[in-house]
Length: 221
Image (cartoon, rainbow, N blue to C red; front, side):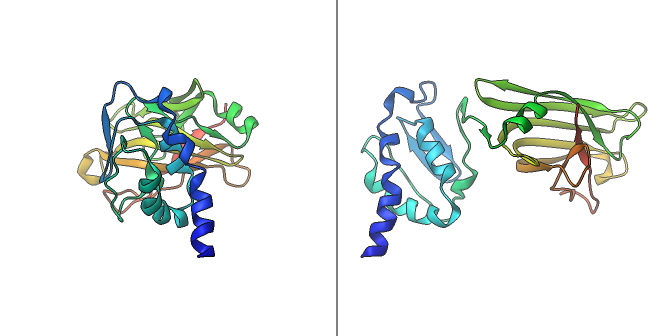
């Protein structure tokens, strides 16, 4: 009984977010998150609450939250749904979590961007913007004599002293890899500073389309 009481107290902190109707997503009457369908009203607080739950508590939330939610919100929960992957609803992404203000300031602005297969002698560029607390990144490097390229496009979830997490798409296209066809990475990825290097490197280096490692680097200004 004590165990269930502790769980319930932890989850009760989520109750107010279900009644925050003033921030409902007006242009999206409903949305689907993986196998979960949430009907209106959908609030950003609800999504934030799910995202911030530790992985160990997500199963508990799946069973408890529907009982606490108002009837106007419908949950069709799946035990396989990775709720920690939830980040945005419709056109309203959650604000970037800033764990180090100086690191966030360093990340803002225009940076050099490179993929080793294209060149380390000339670079592409990536631009990091802050729009009402939501950091985003968009960039591209193209080969001068080939159609090789790398593009980065998405939203930054969190910024720490040595790394930042990114949710979006990275596309690489290199003539001698994957038969020259575009290869897409999509989802949550991490860029990290290692030792005294002056760039953030993509940590998911394994190319999902071929047996090679891709070094996607974003350099300090």
